[in-house]
Image 1 (tube, rainbow, N blue to C red):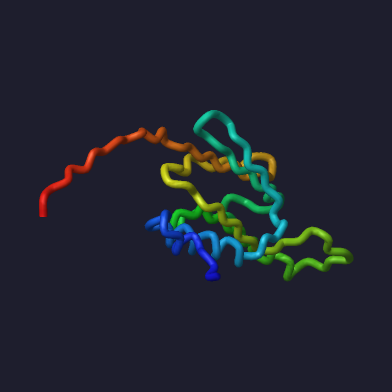
Image 2: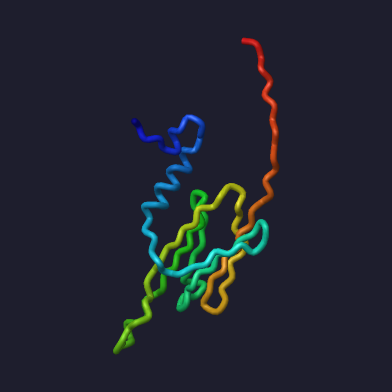
Amino acid sequence: MSKLTLGSHPYLLGFEQLERLLERNAKSGNEGYPPFNIEQTSQNSYRITLAVAGFSEADLSITIEEKQLVIRGRQSDDSEDRVFLHRGIAGRQFQRSFVLAEGVEVGEAIMENGLLHVDLTRAELETVVQTIKIRKG
């Protein structure tokens, strides 16, 4: 018995890219830093909120790469002139990726009280029925 994958199932045509996205997402470690929330703010809108205390707007970048929202953070190291007796606040870099469905667009990003909010909207999808004519060969 052979294993059926999403891209090789006989009734699912053209889903190879989705299968690659799922594999890539499964391989990228699921770290817990920074913590985040995803909330539905209306019927067709969402908000992703990341806890990015200690990061400034200049330390963060938000990009869309191959249908993925990628949020990166990298703080500049200003600890050269400082002597720490205890260092419990991590200043590490991070990357968080979120796969976007077809029709989801990234709106604005807002930094507020150490939280980064990224708003997403989903366009209304119209149901289209198309009739294909059969011609004689």
